[in-house]
Image 1 (cartoon, rainbow over the protein chains, first blue to last red):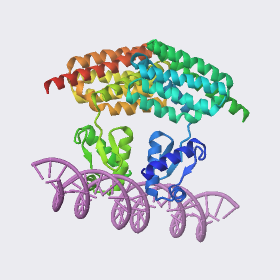
Image 2: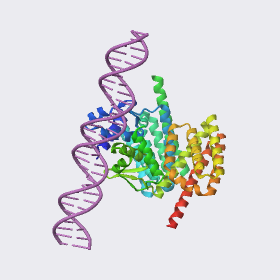
Image 3: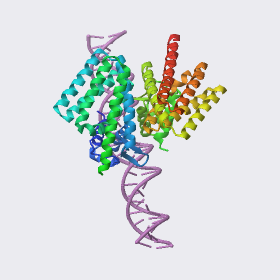
Image 4: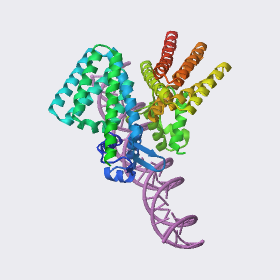
Length: 215
Length: 215
DNA sequence: GTCAACGTTTTTGTATACAAGAATTTGCTT
DNA sequence: AAGCAAATTCTTGTATACAAAAACGTTGAC
């Protein structure tokens, strides 16, 4: 693989996992030293991360880990809700039989992992469920956009898995979505998915609000 | 300004105006020679264009002007319709008084330019109208996404301005949109904007179909 | 004549060198 | 001592040099 690509992945992980915090400066020289490469592939990796919004590039001033304000995050959840709703609407009309099977299997995996009370495993099963919906819409562009924004919101989605009741509700919502898509009811699929995401945004808002109160 | 940035703009223009055609190879060396810079800023510009989808970067094989298939274009118009509908829905709820004035002025400009039958001037007035709607939604992220996709579809939107009747219809649709937003009717604003864009996609499809028949 | 394999050439990817702009420090003035 | 200014240092942006992979052409075998 190209070094720039490997570096991109490594840096992305470091940012998502919080090794680099929002606002941190990403100095080219120290990164180059740390990864034992020249600045060239480092710069390339930083530019790629900037295009996904994970890094902010200030001309002649350097790269910083992007820090999203509360408003920024809410705005992204709003768009995510609409995109995912659109995926659902299209999927309800266009889903293929094998894809429908895949969707139902992904949902069953979610149910199983949830019952095991393994937060990580549930998280990944949930990822796969949403990913199947993106694919099922049969629009490569929409799927790509949805996947990209979904990835960007990863750290924020993860925050709210703690709440037990949320998982149960989430599963019920998934079931409704699967049913709507199978029934070919695009309006209902769109609405349910939109709400499913918006609820996440709201829970996150609650979470942050309580966090702010504590501080 | 940074050279990479200037090059990005120059290349973008050359691609949009058709100086470089879809599928064309963008050789780093010849571009560097042509613009009298080194390969470094050229590569940077190409990477930026790749992130907007205007250029396709094949690892170790070079850069090519992206060529969108018919399906690719339709998919983008579909997403554009949804994003723009969302802008309208939010704008109907959140638009400020000065922004409302700006929107109405932009619409009036469209009407004036249309009556002058100057295709270019109408095109730019139309651009401004849509741009105001993006801003009016009060979501920086949504506005940015909409603007970016709008820009990507520029070459395809331009194709259909020839048709006289389309301009008249388009103006009528604009009027309806302005009214819906002023009335704070978010559902109607969303629906009208969505349809307004989808019609463009359909007209384009007709255009391409007739083009294919001719060939 | 076609195909394949080897060698050449061209092109991309990375490293290093250099230039130019930002940040910082030091020294001077008030 | 505080504030400003010049000079130094550090960092980014660009150019060039080198390495490695892909494209190309040539040559030879069948």
